[in-house]
Length: 182
Image: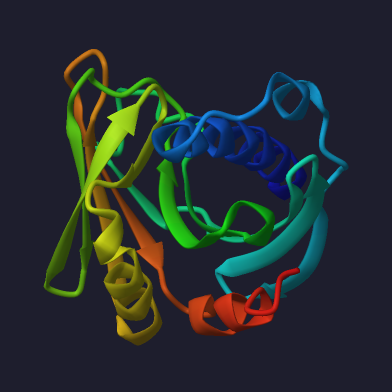
């Protein structure tokens, strides 16, 4: 199950990398067409894993976790969901948080990320969400490191309200592991 989830997470990260990068600058067609190398798991830290792979734009490192609870608990297919923080030094991207869902999100909807009592708003595109105000990314990462609980709330394309709880156990160690990604 973990291998399947990991493979899905990687494909979502790779897709999300292109979408998020398009927010700041266009990628060349050659870079978009280049296939990245298979990811390597660096180490597992409780609920969070640290990974890396080589892309056309350079080395990419990321940490990810899967939810411990999903709401509603029955009646819908949540698919595979992940919370990811990536580093892409070759693209000058450091600690970019991202929520990846196993379903399409409602167009123009927002995803709320609550860490303890701090709320961060994310914009959506297809199955992914990124921090709406990039200046808040460091605060979100700091909250992950010091927090006790992470909850992600989203609305599916069908209009279903969903939420996911993630353990933050191991996130600080996982982020430290990718600190020197080069």
